[in-house]
Image (cartoon, rainbow, N blue to C red):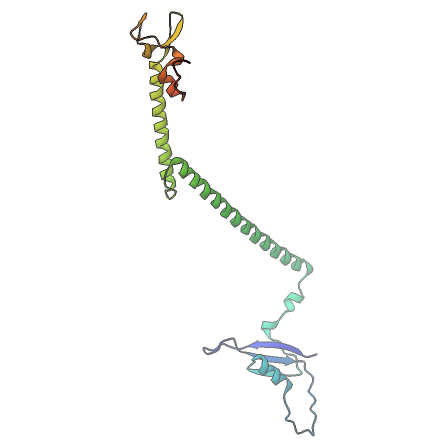
Length: 207
């Protein structure tokens, strides 16, 4: 049975694709019917022209083209085939793992960007600021909070409670001086300063 092979030729500068020759070996001689007026056409040459071959070689001999040699694959053992299949499967699995990792990284980056915007909003700074600006803003907020806590502590120390004639009064508001008060005694739970610090509203005189 005839075999079809491709013999690649050196590529020239004007070739838009690699040139090749169609090789038909182990071919039986063609039968030609005589006595007809129609011109005799070469069957294999017609095929070569249609597929764009530069020429066609038809021979009953066996022609071995090294580039088309597949004997190495035919002689492979079953173990070698399985090994190559396992290697291919391993590369596929690794490619899938890397694809999943890229997906996870993209998802994590999106989540990080959202958290970064939320943090910027909470700190009251522009979302375009970098992480160093956010860290510095957070440090300033901590300093302000600590300073405010110290100031509130000093105010509470000034408006501390003391017992006066059986009632707990505010030292500062009552101007307590050891045993007497320079101002009208103010009950500790009625100290306006402490109520303001606690976020309480002012009570009416009837309360």
